[in-house]
Image 1 (tube, rainbow, N blue to C red):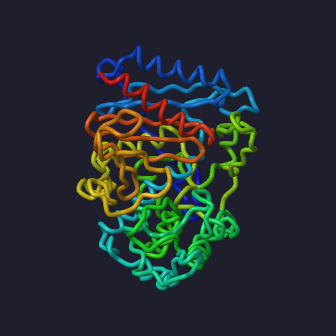
Image 2: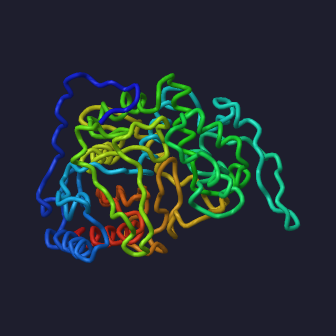
Image 3: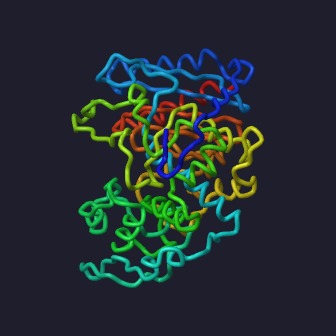
Length: 407
């Protein structure tokens, strides 16, 4: 896997094997984990998803790792442990970690205004309704780096609504993989905000903008920075903004049409090297690679003797940064949850329609990938598939069955 402007050594050292143990030694029920696999086998047989990978770890060791179904519905190739997936928004925690590393390096503050780094964001307008009419009014304050990390910037996503601002996004080139990160940021800055910065949670292209901030501060492409500071140190050799042509036989693909709605599914070609390295959703990866990132988070910011992020910095990232004063819009955050700096965070034991622990943090990808880390149970899990329309269902099914296996 390669990233733009990020050449790796000619000889890449082999990725260390993930630490593994028998489920029983980790406080996990083997029979309940088998029930997890059996449930997804049934879903595959019903045609819900082409194939999946399931990884469950506790106490820092992998207790269950299964690959089920087909890697692609167009071929007979089975899903395998090293199949490559579009992880889309599971890119966000990695890029958010990169920004926090620059904060630890002293290059910026959470309270810094975005306009300090990208001048186009210095004077923005907010789209508001007054007397039944839409007006543009000056933003009450500038977007901060913290706003971008917690999605309180007022920036939008084209697929999270159908209001006037969302329609402007839909009719623009923000989704193009052929524009640069700099061009993308300028385009977003030219569009009005959904709300005044800091007042509402709106899931958005904010992390794409953070990717551009990383480029400006580091002087490198986002791919080069991530490779140098996170991916290579963690030996995540299969993660990047595109897959090498030699890996064409390992790409996981969706059904051509959604099995529930019959709508056509179109996902980007993982072999194409994009001009835009999307900090919000551009990475491709494998289950084992992403497990190394999760192990680093589980360990408080380090893995195999290499520290990526400070323990206290990670504690800040995985704490709720919304609080009761921020209005939460959309359906991205389940009841009983808030949002930190790059992760959703569980704030209450109840309310959510699935089990878990207060302090659990997680995120997912629109094509059907998902992970969570539960510090109280010392547990993390990763689910990979390419089934966009079934993602909400498979996330909850995975959570229910994994927690049923915790003893």
